[in-house]
Image (cartoon, rainbow, N blue to C red; front, side, top):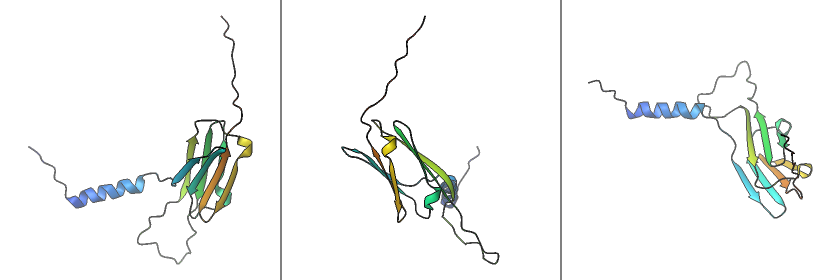
Length: 131
């Protein structure tokens, strides 16, 4: 019988590798008011011009890119770096429609606040079935 033994240190190393390869998205908070929805995302180190906010009737998609700083030629590589760079995207689906024309987004101190007013009317389409 063959038995594989792993030390606890091997398990920690595996966990660390999984954490490094896991996709990280910014923390979000969504609140509903009588007038609409307020979405707040933590985006430290993101430049405002790299943030993109798009909306459909019931969905809000927020994407951004955090660029790695340019290293000087004589700079040494860090001993440890837990910073994440690159692009990501998050989508939020709302129980009722949102007014796309009334969307507002404000970025300050690493926080993005998007306000989405509720739609006053929802459009529906009826299709005649021919047979």
